[in-house]
Length: 562
Ligand code: NOJ
Image 1 (tube, protein in one colour):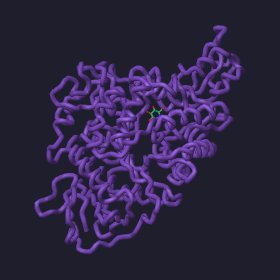
Image 2 (tube, protein in one colour; image 1 turned 90 degrees about the vertical axis):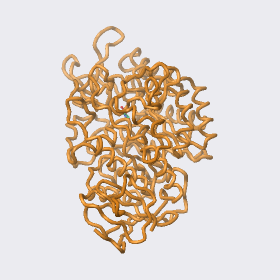
Image 3 (cartoon, protein in one colour; image 1 turned 135 degrees about the vertical axis):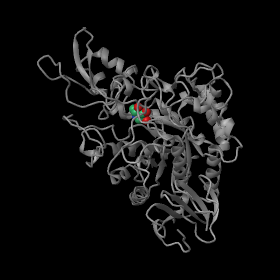
Image 4 (cartoon, protein in one colour; image 1 turned 45 degrees about the vertical axis):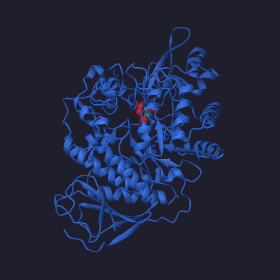
């Protein structure tokens, strides 16, 4: 198809005087146990991460988000925190964190840490005190302990299910040795939910936030930000089914209105710091998007992951709809849209986009499951990334996506560690496949992840060719593609641009003009036939080779100067 004049309709205005760093930042997620291992025990750590900061600088990102490294029994890879103010010895020490932070800041990289407020570890001092103190004690009130139903209290207080499978309640043995009360855990049995109605819980988290702000972190990614407040009656709930159209807030545990006053108090604390401006980013799986935007009101979160974009099927119409809707609902509260395609909880987009279009993404892939088409997946993933980085707002990238890493899709059950796998008896494979230790050097032990060759999860054979050193300075590699995209995005101020949807192409093309520093055409062709660029357009970057006549083939994205 030939296009000479671009017709377009505006979907996002630029006129924002406030260009705060977080409104356009590219933020790199480090999953510490799988990033780089400094001590050779097979588990990544803070000294390992510190040694790789120059790589992140060269990649061009603005900030790093660290998944939890706090003291933890690691029942959910650190999302079960036993001490919020200390570093687990697996990952190093508080001094290691301070050294890392100071190096990162010297390189101009900001550091965001993870905050896990919905639940603690069962090994947290508060929970241990609650167990010891027994029913009716003030110690129990900081969690959600309840008596069971039935004559002997043998039935859970309600029918809620854990997100990881199985019941959301576990019965404790009381100090006198008899079976007693039950406690709520929306996730693993080792992750008891806190009672956010309790003033001590609220005060404690303000103090924890202050602890890390005072150390100089640039902010927090907030775990399950939509779960803290529950319906006090704890009524039975039959849950959502796939693609359930009901608002998340219909449930008694997700997206209750009461969460917002908590975040207003946090924001006030963050606002009392500056240089840099400190931020928080919500992990809040919420439907509909209008409810998600409530977290982004000016006195609450700065950012919230756009999971609708992450989950969007590889269909032009769906992508256009999600992008327009996201910008629309967030613009209404003057908020930034925060794009993301991969993280430590989902099948990497390189693998996800290699699966048939249509069905919901699986929670992990095993050897017996239908396997992604690796070439198609990578091709689409790079196109999706160029689309994402061409949109105004902030963007998160997950470690290893810049190498084009797929999931490990054939992990044997016996090495899997995600509690989801155990709690669903293998029905869901879980998230280990996207958490594989990174390949740094194609020929070294553990592909350069760890000097001893140890890795807490095995690396698949295809990771060797994707190692960072095999891609560095190699024209056409995924790593060089990411570097170029992040650099151009900065130069052309795409993260701060206006956006107009181009309507001159057919239904299978997603195209925008991003009015950043100058107009940039951002175009993805999802159709079977190549499409041509408008007359005079000069290609800046493409996700794959263009056709010999300069047209854009299927599953390819382009940025072009107009
Ligand atoms: C969301 C985190 O991203 C995930 O990894 C974790 O298992 C749950 N929250 C529970 O903390």
